[in-house]
Length: 303
Image (cartoon, rainbow, N blue to C red; front, top):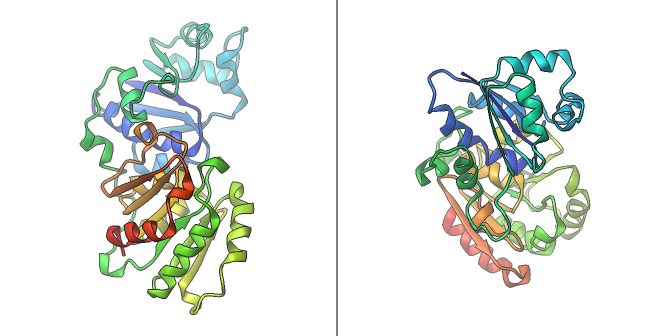
């Protein structure tokens, strides 16, 4: 059984799709699954063993899915002729994607928007599973990813990881609050792993201006602009994680790291991180989440 899954979207969108793919895989005997999606997530998806093959959605050949001329790249035509089931989580209101796949020889095709309709407050994992006719239990949603790295004893997990950024500025808790939490952790002798990606440069610079020199150099570790697989490895050794509604937050949760996720305008009913140890604080006005409250929650979760 050859299954092709096309899932465009941000890092978090793709990560939240992996447990759904894992549940789908269990429905077939030795299926071969190809995931076409966000390039940053693909190495991680491969290492988990959830998918067998990966391809970057940004490659020009996948643009032919939407072409009025159909699929003309010979290598893609050959690949699609071997596909028994294609699942495309994207908008195809005019049916052109489904028609192109059918003309290329795909036997069964499912297309559905990549997120619930406005007003449909169902978790994204549940929604995606429903579109392909499977039921995802809460246990399956919160199980996380397969173990990727050697286990580390809880007594050896020292760092608390903090990611102050997100893909959208409105989804970010104020920088000065993150600074206050970091300094509170330092006062307790707890080292911090500070995470940032290319989209976080301005927030990172602002945070660095607010932070004093740590009382001990070992209290601050930086992980800036590195591949997702390296972030996963470092996160898996942390005692806890604090972050906004962002892809890295979903990664921490899926890895089983005790995760405190801060939600502002996003609806956690739809987008909440899933994992064995997740706590969510939600306020439509981020100023209503003071750093003292966040620190209390973080302490009870992992400190």
